Image (cartoon, rainbow, N blue to C red; front, side, top):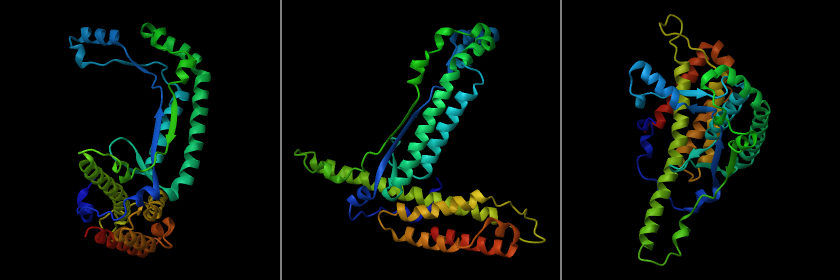
Length: 303
């Protein structure tokens, strides 16, 4: 993260009402497990090392147990996409993989992630239905490296695929209020410190994502016009769509009512009114005006 772009967040955030964040959102714990279908072969590793006079500690020979299995690849690709999608609508909370989700976004998030979970298990079943045939093909492809003991049964393999979603509540400072010990004050102070840091982390994350998207938009709009040596860059619809989506996220993630995020949302929302990909591609004057608006917002963000 380019922290120089969020210098205005360097000062500690003062949280006047700690439960605000808790009542405004939940934490998200998304856990997806997928059988990789890959296995280290120690015998092959030793053979490669011996053949090349190398130390086997520096060599790792890994087999794709099913070779090119389209059904397994589909499960892997889908699970990676689900993780990436969940990151897009949430912000990091601490270092344990939890994400913060504003309550305003919870209904649509839960609906979509539930549908994704259903599709995930459908893809898993599709893979399992072809598993034994894929194993037979792998036996021919791997030759002497094939080892039937490395292939789990269909039922045990099914257990290796998991798609779990949980929504633990955002904790509040109240959980230390009933501790009657000499450590009570320390725990209360330490918890409030960590809690404040995590609020800052949520705010910084949203701020930086918006900054990066505006900067990317500005870079794409950068063109000196006719006669300029600069190359006219292509504007993709996804660039504008992503910026609009992030702009819409700002109010939901502004759980502390920070005036900086409110101002940013108002400025960006105003700058994007009527902006279309086609207009930016076809009208050079409009393109230049939009870039000027993006750069003005970036300048305000760097105070």
